[in-house]
Image 1: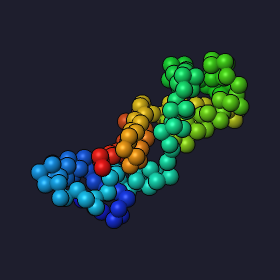
Image 2 (image 1 turned 90 degrees about the vertical axis):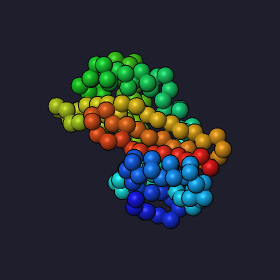
Image 3 (image 1 turned 180 degrees about the vertical axis):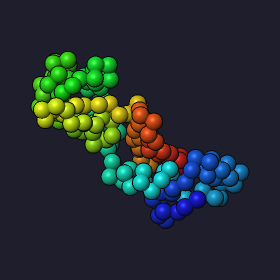
Image 4 (image 1 turned 120 degrees about the vertical axis):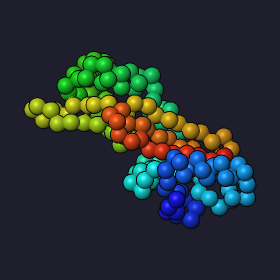
Amino acid sequence: MKKESQTTYKVGSLREFAEWTKSVVRDRKRAPGVPRRWFDSDETAARAATDRVSAETMVKLLSPGNLAVLQAIRHHRPASMRELATLTGRKEASLSRTLKRFAELGIVSFQDGPHRTRVPALIASRVHLEIDLTGHGSAVAVDGARGGRGRLTIGLAG
């Protein structure tokens, strides 16, 4: 198991995490001082460090109206932002801001379309929101829809 930082996170496989978890169950003295966040790669850990979003922000972003936009992208595969605006009844400027935020979080992406249009595409299949009620922190993870590896974020109870 590779230790990336003394207190922030570790990089390791699910198998390594499972083995460590079992050892802590057998001997709780192994738990103190071990980072509370585990990732599947250094790349994922670096992305997580810059992808901070509060649980409150994510809940607001995933409003019924915005979920309808994601569903429209998934089901209709609009050829442009204008077409998506027509499908959803939203103004293009508002829609653009919302989709930009979704893109920053890895939920949607944009491809270049004909005549300088931007074609929105849904690239995430699910969003996991973990809220720690003890105040030790929360985490948001996005799983890729196209066979890509999503972020592995595991919070350990404190």
